[in-house]
Amino acid sequence: MKTTLKLEEAGMFLAAIYAFSYLPYAWWWFPLLILAPDISMVGYLMNNRIGALLYNLFHHKGLALLIYISGLFAKSDVMQLTGIILFGHASMDRLFGYGLKYSSGFSDTHLGRIGKK
Image 1 (cartoon, helix red, strand yellow):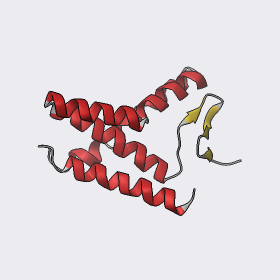
Image 2 (tube, rainbow, N blue to C red):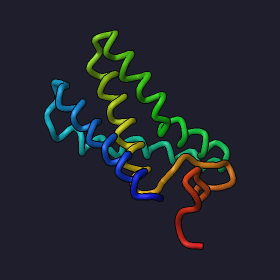
Image 3 (cartoon, rainbow, N blue to C red):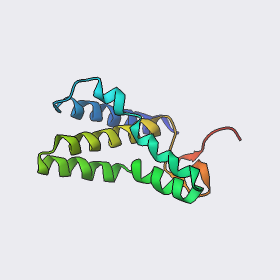
Image 4 (spheres, rainbow, N blue to C red):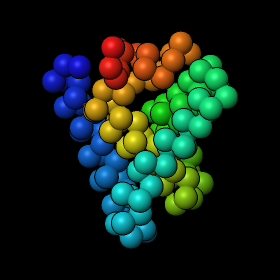
């Protein structure tokens, strides 16, 4: 992935940390929860199609922002936290080259193939 894209993802990850700092949670909640969206990979135990669907749902930045903004309007700290964690996690994953998945397999992403060839 190009350096510019990695810097953009790093900036979005830092924005998630900044947004988290405005929530009334202790700092340790962020590192504790940041890997939680990877629970979506259990879908791959069923098959690649369901795995990709669940993975992409939990790693979709638009959905993360929708949840966060809904939390702002609803004055729900939990919804805001959920949106921030989903957004930050997706940014972190893309920073490391893990993109949204194709149903052909976990290694096939919108950013290119990952893993050993």
